[in-house]
Image (tube, rainbow, N blue to C red):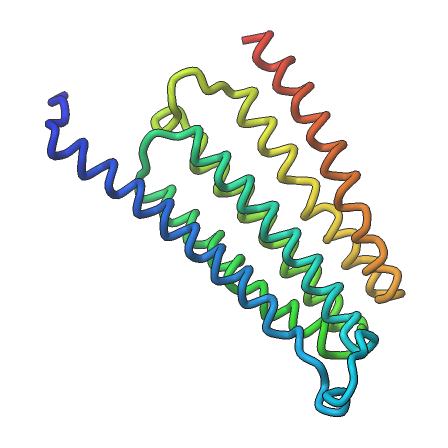
Length: 212
């Protein structure tokens, strides 16, 4: 097989950097759009009252956490690979589509009554982000794309850590069928579930890498 020349290597590096920069731009725009719903209702312009904004603030804080968390995971994932291919680009676009879409279900759950339909729509939309992140991880963590020193245990660690969020949101969707308000409270489990998944993922990585 012919070794790539300098121009080809430079083109590959440029293409990889464009993929990363484009991804960061989508994250930045999505996380900025979340703040657009934080506006006082027309009847409260003569005095300051955060009461009517509490649902909006909760929706903003939750979705900001989700988008920020996935940006960190996405950043860490791309730090482990050295190049790209069409499969990776396609998986990345699907994942970014779910990130760009997230401000819409956030607006739905913040601006409408927290009923079964709006809460299920929101939590399933966020759960899909996690599922697509897992698919992106599988597309990125292939031997042909990985940097030297990356292992199967590292892939398992990322997948386990990423699975925590969609599992919590999927559970919230089930609870929302009976009690939409309690389903939103269930989302408080995101942080401890993330810690637990991180611990399990690291333990699994050590076991897999030790057995390799």
